Image 1 (cartoon, rainbow, N blue to C red):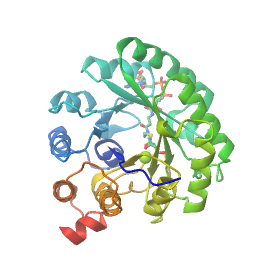
Image 2: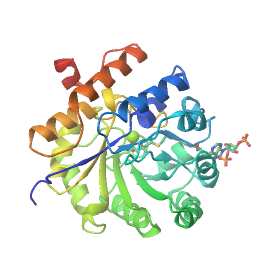
Image 3: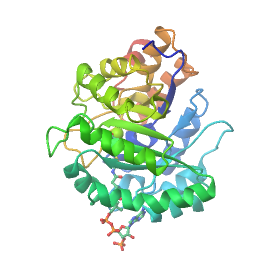
Length: 297
Ligand code: HMG
Ligand code: MG
């Protein structure tokens, strides 16, 4: 398979990047982050999550944040919803795209959303029905595709089965998440290839956390398998509080640098993205995790 000529980046920093932050970040800062990202050429910015505030206190301000951002034409601003309640809350403030999320590992699904995989999919069914009636697009996430912090190994067949179910349910795109950044390129490639045999490759995205420094290598392996959509977080923030040991997403700046350097178009203005990442890391009071930002900034 030849490399794609263009890749769509799904910027997950405002959601995955911030959800694990211990100190509550003011809504105004989250809004400014999204507005700054909206000026970098990104086409998709995951804005927040309409989940239980008991589970993710950092994103309890989801409605305020979503209502406060300046939505630019042509940019999608999806949000996470775990159930119908989340969908209704999101729609009240005008959300036009949502993402549902489950896992390939039963143990992780239980910890993260207090449900079995089957139960989670039953919760998504009415969300997808309402969304179809409302003209709302739904993305689907499968977590722990290369390993689980509680169960350990996750068979590729389980990843394939869950991805296929989300696609059959009506998710337009399935994002395959290495939640704890445990995979290595040969396993990432084999996993992606197995899923792509059952779900059209055009409907797949990859979501790598960089916990062990493997994210760009894993991404390259999947690019060679034809993936055209990549999740990443500006400044390399991120992690899930229900995934022990999970740290930042692969940094968007590093992904853009690698792709553009390989002649793969992203549409993203790298200097503007680097500036936004440095602005965010100053707000968070720590150094950026993006190597490219450190080199260019
Ligand atoms: P539960 O406690 O089992 O559910 O949580 P419940 O239905 O019993 O509800 C408990 C309380 O939450 C009730 O309130 C509900 O009303 C409320 P109370 O009566 O106690 O006052 N509630 C809600 N409130 C606001 N919005 C909602 C909502 N739903 C219920 N939507 C639940 C089940 C799914 C709600 C919970 O487990 C939850 O919110 N989990 C979210 C965890 C999460 O957000 N994790 C991080 C995102 S996933 C991730 O990071 C991985 C990813 O990046 C990909 C990768 O890296 O692999 C996507
Ligand atoms: Mg994640």
